[in-house]
Structure formats: structure tokens, C-alpha cells
Length: 388
Image (cartoon, rainbow, N blue to C red; front, side, top):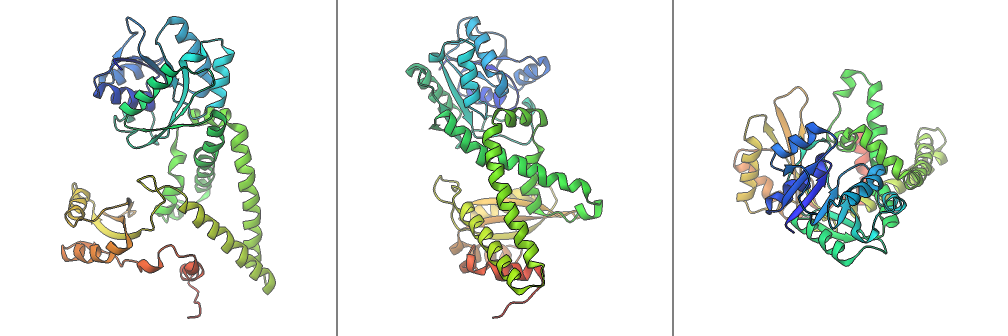
């Protein structure tokens, strides 16, 4: 690949352009927003304008509802020899592209499964797609040359290609992306009704649940509209589960012993299914998510403190599977959670203590994520006691 054109210089379009220019591809940028395209060019994503001859591939980084019209327009202009898009919905754009009468053999749907809460070219990053899944949805008409160009694009961006039917893709992302965004927005919306003192009690759990609710409202409105039926189906199933959960909680608050027992059973079933679903998410190497133990370290809010901690962990030779940071409200400190293999947790904690780090008590590795301890954990959180 020598040349590429990127239509739409938001987060995704600019990140793709940055990744391609890093590999020596000559990228031409265009956007209806003059400020956005000039910002992307200033960041080194490419040059503003149209290639003198058709580019090897054009990336349409525009909202799902505009894919068909933009594809037809750019094909008429002869922008490129092959075309792909990055919309998070595939069925609708594929049908729209066909309806606008363009050449379906030079188009392949695409969806890089990566993003950030922030939008626009200033949030772009050349490494955004590294080791991330990138779905390609060829239609029955997609030509081999176009498929190969799209695969090369994915490789240059450092992503992992997955070929998937467009309708199957839309059903899948409704569960793993679109419905979670709606749920995050619903939970975050409840915070409007809390006092400032109550909101200050928010911990890392709430931040994790509501993080994706920060997405661009117009963009997400377009995404949800484009995949409305599939998302509605997922939310209907969630609503049914919520009805059962509400009934279980009402039962736990009742005076009748049988109602309380039934509530306990229903709630335990929900939480156990949640554990099983969480365990189905692939780990960082693509296999099953490993059972890890958190090692929590208090650090000061000084420049370089986190880098110093990670450097110390690296010197110990421990492989960190995941990491999160919880800032303490109103305090110049934060809690860093490093998730490591159970066999490494206690030794790592002790070695960090010996180096002067403030390490909290490490959970018993044998009890990590064990469903049998579910009731005991819940009881400790509510301040009640259970029999030994």
C-alpha cells in the first residue's frame, strides 16, 4: 500500500491516518469540518486534499447513516480503487451502499473495535488499534483485491482481522457494545438526582460502569438508531432480568421467610450467571480471562509516582495482567490495583512492601472469584455475620 485517503478526521479516521503515515503510506485527508482536517494534518496524519490518482484504498470514517451517500459520491469522483468504512454498524451501511448504486465489488465493511471516551482528532493515537479486533464484513459482491487491501490496512494499523457477516456483527455488537453504552448512560443519569456529598462516595466501581457514558451524544444517537432493533432485543432481555431481580430484592425485604429464601436463590443465580459471563470475556492474549488477584498499592499524587511503581513491579519480573487507578476524592493520593496471577500475588506484595510501598492486604488467592464465597462476601459488605 502506497497511498490512502481518509474521509472524516475524527478520532478513528485520524488514528488510522497516523498509523498509516507511520508506515510510510501517503495519506490524503478530507472532512466537511475544515478545522478538524487541518488539525489532523498538523498532527502528522497526512495532507489535506485529493490524491492526484486514485488511492489504493479510501477509509470512510463517517457516521453509519452517511456511509451509502459518501461511498457513492467518492466512487463517482474516483477517489480510490478500494473502499472500506469504520462504522460500528454493518448491515445498514451495506444495504445503503447497494441502494445508492455504487460498485459493490470495491467496497468492504469494516469496524475496528477500539475507541476512547474523547472524540475528535486531538484524541487520536497511532497505536489505538494495536492488538485490537478489527471486523471486516465482505458482501457476496466484494472482490478479492478489495479484501486484500482491507486486510493490509488492518495489518498496518496493528490490529487483528476477523471476518464476519454484517448481520451477525450487528447482533454481536448490540450485546458487547451498544446495549452496555445505554446501560452506562442509565446508571450515570441517576447521579443527577444525588447531592454533591452523595456523589463524592463514588468509587472505582461506579467509574468503571459509567465510563463509556462519556461518549459523544450525536455519534451514539446515530449508532443506536442504525442498530435499533438489535439493541432493543438485548435491552428487552435485560428488562426481563431486571424484573426478576427487583422481585428478588423485594422478597429479601419481606417479612415472610419463604419470600426471603426465594429472593436469596434468585439473586444468587443472577450473580453466579454474571460471574460466568464475565469469565467468558477473553483475556489480554485472546484466551480465556485468567483468574487474577489484585495487589493494591497507595501512591502519592506526584509526577512520576506511577511510573516509579510500574518500574519497581517490572524489576520483580511479575507479569501484570491488568491495572486500574482509583483517585481518592479530596486527597493527594490514589489507589493503584495491579492484577497478577494468584501464585505471584503474595510474593509481589511482600517485595513491594520491602521496597517501601504502601501495600494493602492481598486477598486469599485460593478464594479469588469463587462462587461459593459469594454469600459470605455480600454479608461482609452489608455488615452482617454468617455462620462459620
